[in-house]
Image (cartoon, rainbow, N blue to C red; front, side, top):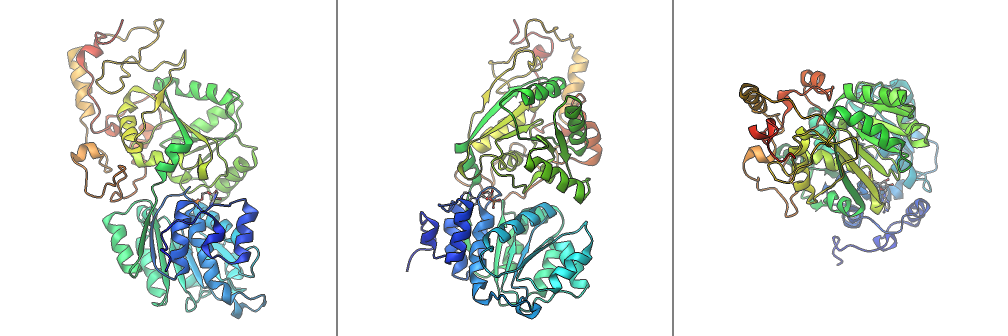
Length: 500
Ligand code: AMP
């Protein structure tokens, strides 16, 4: 017997049906990605699967293709709804991800008479009910809307052969696990189940125990791929000069379609407005926007009428934008894993991409965390006229320092009292997402390459109260400071260290 985990080099080696291979070829794909090479034989064999893979790895095709093949014997051109019961249920945490997964299902099923439908909240349920009543074999849904549909009594699960739980860590993050558990309990016990998650916390493992039977484990660390195809660059810059620098970068000819990340919804809106005022076609996307606004912004970004999309981590997670060349971190994330999620939108499937981060003095410790996780020392380029704060020190505490330009005014002398109060602000309690520094030691689930599979995904969205302060990069709040932010040496505050 062939080892299902041995990676074949071409799609044609995977034993997929000719109709599916045609759909793959239509996409221009010849080689399966690592998760596809490993997962497709396992799923084709009818086994349960626990997949450690993030968006950007090709995981959607890794579960969609073999599941389509498994229901292919039941495919029917008959118009009768009775011939098209729900056979595969795919659960996704957000509307955007559900839509994307459904797009993949449509793409790969285009040469076979298999019907699919996507159901998510925030839009009228009636059209979804009507579509489902006509019969669909593959239903992609968000958990809340699926339960609404169950209440409307338009769904029957007795023919469900397979369940996919995509981005389980995000489901957990968004409080969907009770809904997911209710759904699982409605499904036939005899079924195939696949769970995909970027991280495996204890809670995800508990859910996997409930949902999966003797699953095959497949882990693909996305950042290895990312690190090979993406050029990372940091521009050290004073926080109050970030907006002007961003405008300058966006106006340069190198930049066309760019996804810009901020940490808060407030900043996302403000920045998009400011870019528009600067004559740059920009829009924003975040959780407070209506479904229609989000879809419109995304469509405009995809068709090129909007060149810059400003997004929060949560809104952007799972976005699939083909050949996105540039990601700019207007603020770098406080959780290093979020950096990986952010840059997962560029450099996909081996394509080249650029990840640029605008880093101010107070963000250096987060940069250090990110560099440890991705195992890359990121090149730092100071742009003339946009120098960082006088106390920008990299690595923190190192003699090598980026200095303000000679023209910049020297910082005002700081009294020992002021220095003391600044230090005490830096000692404020850490956020719930404790960094590995503050934990003091690495937990045992850290992979050899440094990836922490035990850590639940934590959104970089701060507490709403903190957001009101953090939304303005010109203000700093002790509450959101890095728990181990390197304290500034008093001598530096007095302008004595490393200055000419
Ligand atoms: P996903 O991780 O499923 O969100 O997919 C990431 C991106 O990779 C999507 O834009 C897919 O269209 C693309 N993709 C999926 N499989 C392949 C493949 N075998 N070769 C090249 N690109 C792929």
